[in-house]
Image 1 (cartoon, helix red, strand yellow):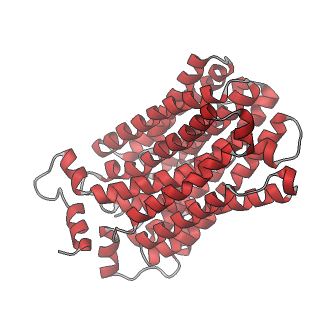
Image 2 (image 1 turned 30 degrees about the vertical axis):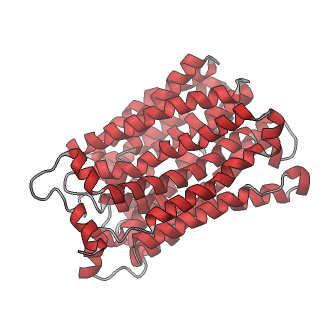
Length: 441
């Protein structure tokens, strides 16, 4: 039996006598590892930028002004990637639906890694003036373009190889790449802050996480190059032709699912980037808390996000992914109301509690997406539909989140910091209520 047939056979496990959970996972370990490691690398690259934007990019890459203005400018450069992601989703989705998932995933990883590595060598504003933020934004655009093709492909890699009854639990593995990448990113910044002086960190230490990305990208490529095509895509191309213009067909024939999928993702982005990028910037700049202490709080809180993803994956297979997403959105609305006042205390315990609760709830609005979004589209259009919906939703939920939260705090006080999360959850809830469960395979 060749490798492709072997993977297809493994992915089909469960059609006879139902094996145990560990046995199912072990049989599909190659696919699950590839989906987890690849997204971990991609999210590590994305999050080290978010962390650096909160800590160092303001004073290093933007002209001197008030700390809050510099922070907002750094967040604006952070937002560039979210506008690049739909374009990356359109391009990578096109080729993912036409030539396959594997090759497209390899290309997206290489682009993301190359852009991240280049940031390590950028001169600062003090050296080349306005060219510095322009180059920074260009590399950030490359990061977003690459990530635009990453998540959708990784989700399909897992879900399209899932045995019956396991789609949500397989689909949660790319989602787990988010907390893993975050732990790697913030953990490295935490270590550097502990071993370097403030002057050393600002001068050159912040560049090391971007250099380290090269090692992780090589690891991700090595794993992904060992894979073959997903079983569902292979079966599809054996029986029907691929679409000539997949995204055009998605928007023409599946417009309602696309819109529903787009707005359903807004909540997860808003929660994540307010509890991570915004909270880190506010805690260190406005509250004058120690950088290492706040990073440690976030590292502890992110474990609750991983727990939420795992529980949501199991619950989604027991019930439906849509039900779990609705429950997560309902819980987010009151959580957003209390988040700002808890952050404003400036005390470690209330802040940690707010971060942990927020990220735990995020697991329920993020974990089931890996199974729910692909169910909205047929296999021949799935890469384009999933990637486009997920990444356009990121503009509303992710790109604007730190900027809006920082602006609300500046105008109305820290008590309003979490209201954007509540509003985003309400938007996602409406989208989920009109979407249906999705029944396509």
